[in-house]
Length: 537
Image 1 (cartoon, rainbow, N blue to C red):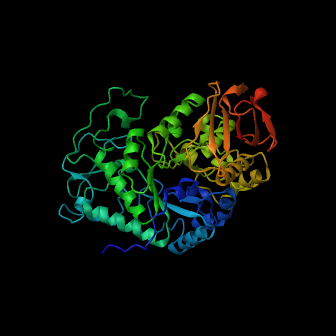
Image 2: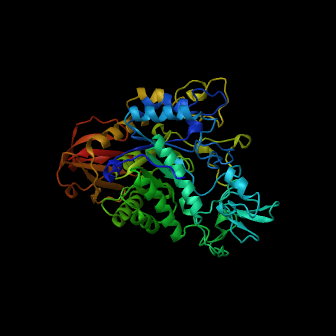
Image 3: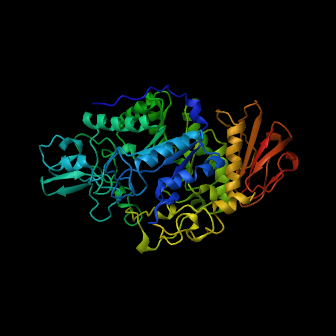
């Protein structure tokens, strides 16, 4: 029987449009109880005051379900329970309550495309060709040429099962069989799971790997990619994936999941690495604006300069309706950390000011606010099955202080991944005391955003300098804020005639080394290298 949901009034878009989201990777956040080197739920509860002081509205948890941890929790064994590694249901209920007491919201990861091969559904499905759950997964007597994302050995997306003499399909690890979302029973079961967590108080979901959930029903072979180069490209790119993912029916199914969540007054954001046109399709299929695709354009951008970044952001805005909201991350658990990817702490500060002053939902990955960088992981300590990419360097433990293990876990415990070498300089305790630290910058940016900015698109200001990105935002009291971002290694000047007035009052710089409230004369103004400025006009 399908569960009945608690009644909830649909939340207007604008209530989410101004929120900020903080992604917690539970295994690496804080270990309050565990001495096994893994973070836990009690550790998250202990650090909620920090997140509130930072200015966060929503905490988003990567998977905490029971799992064999072949893919760090994205191989779900049981959608309705808590992984004992992190705690239990009672502790999770306490976390939900503690978050809500602080007027914050809580978001869970939802993994719809696949389960663990240890999930009871799959065990039943593989037990017999005639089992009622056989069609809950994808089974074939002969495999096609589809290949999975992770495995660099066989490459095939199909694994042979001796018991039933057929192959099952997996877009990722062989321990992660794909669910068949063309089966209405699967859809109903997954909706019931979402209802279970919403009824417990979960406010939102991040939908994992959504563009994989629907496959072509006839399972044809995929065409070869003529641009593929052996040794340069990942083996998964040898084919053009025209039928194993990114199906129009899949976008409709994905939107249906989001619309179901939205019908309960909750919010969802979709993890889909797809082009802008496909994302616009998801926007148009979304009801009430409560289910939106994540915008990964800044993460995937390999050219960090003013003109490219301007084009990425404002071309996308031009495709959207004014009411469309944009969840915008700079990094996540699957990508190199922003400070490493962009090449310097100054660039990371510039990116933070850009993200926080755009019309978006900023999604902050834990540690970005400290300037944490990728950590070199010795081969014997690597945990990630995706060895071709190796995501471990961005998943290392949060750096809380300069004590052994960076305050992440007990000094006598062995963290599941190594601590970053810069933890004595880049940690919460030290940066909270430093008025010019990266953490201080994040606190000020989040406060300015919450206090002053309204939900309205920014307007480009042409300052006749290709190295400077400039735009304005409107404040709550109908004033204008000017943002100037110098992407250059050199000092840069701007054309004062392009501005509506000759002077303005300084609110913030990325280095935090200027006096706030100081009035600047744009006729003689020079932007420092890799520096960002926010002025009240």
